[in-house]
Image 1 (cartoon, rainbow, N blue to C red):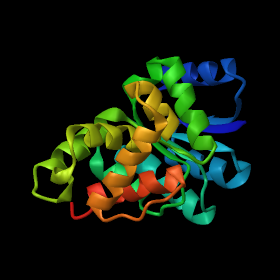
Image 2: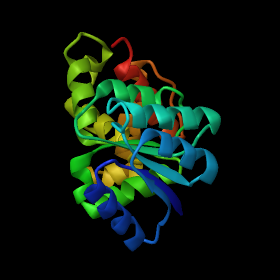
Image 3: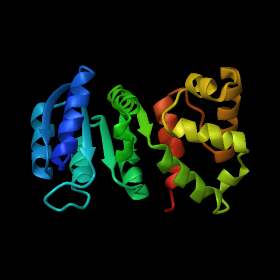
Image 4: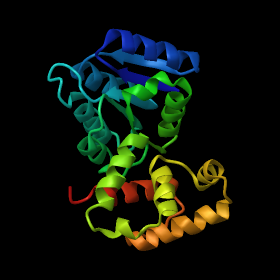
Length: 217
């Protein structure tokens, strides 16, 4: 699996390269700036891009904007974004096109090799990998503003959080130590209460839920 990696801090970039190679990823390019990332994504057509939000020369959201431009040129390009802090706007922008194969992790997560590699693989396969802290902030904000999220039970909120991280019903059932049938019932209730159509497409359902939670910012 070929990866384009963009991170301006050399030590972190080198560490990520070594980690990915240790898990049999091929590093197509490891770059440290927005222009380099744009060229690499256009010329190398990687299986997945792992991108820091803030890259030179602007050190604002250059990495994210390069990734979004690449996804417009190649719809569905899998992109895993890394960020130092929870930026809800960035999460929303990344999910906005609904093309799948997206992830948003805080940089602290990359020090957990198993979690980081799982996120890269999930995104490369067309799934979603959202940082739990991002989901928690979205849930907390929506729960307090009088919208339909307040209708969900504590268990349904727990299931929704795990859904939004990209977990399948089977994975949620295993984590909560309940049957998959019970999770399917919770999922159905969640979509009904939020006014969303039920879908068997795990990635699409997560994108729909997150789009709902983050709308009207």
